[in-house]
Length: 346
Image (tube, rainbow, N blue to C red; front, side, top):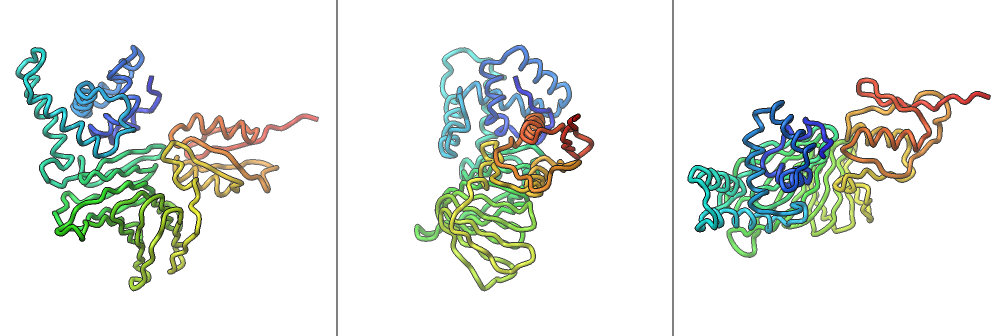
């Protein structure tokens, strides 16, 4: 049964629902508890009913157990297969009105994915996440972007053939960029990410960008990217796999570190990793992801550090881990998590 709050799904479009594991489990093998959850959701947010119905249709037609394992190319092929299945002579009798609705839904989704050469984003020009949320987005060129909490991605409504693909990121996101042909085989269509004053140019690669703090951090997992800054427009540098680049807010130069920190991208798997983090560093990361400020009340916190991991989308589990790790009572008041060590009687 899904334990996610309703607001986790409010920004979801059909593909987001299709790729959500809880939704897949509900559609394919729903329990009474799951049926009750989604019935309550539909009653609370009737404007999402059509979106949910479209997602349920696709999951039932495609019968895919885990959408998270599919590559963008495989995902696109699955949608094409649905269209083929709908156009083919039906094995069983389906009412005419339903066949028409199936065709319209599949055509709409394929069109939004860029089918027949139209380069549109999935649903809108701006994708957003709230605190404690993550979102996986499939762009029209088959690039996959995973947005971290409290982030947004702006995508042009259309990319023309031969032009570079540009997006604007605020917050944090992980990019899996596909290579695209250009006007000639030697000139591919570059993918460009604008993050504050940094411009990140790629052809095909996987990398993470974080603008949540007072510095912009870029970590490269695969491929090669070129960086430039509005502060030094005449200077560019290339980043290679395993390298991380940072540009602090008060410095013009881009700093490159030889080894990427695995904690920079662990959030994609629902984890925040810490190693000997100060309480200030711990509090900053929790506030970025959850919008909650950690308050360490009382004595005995000086020189305390934290090594371990925390969840990215579960406030209850976050609170329990903090309480057990620090041996403290944790109370939430408004946007604060207050940690107090219990008094011991002599």
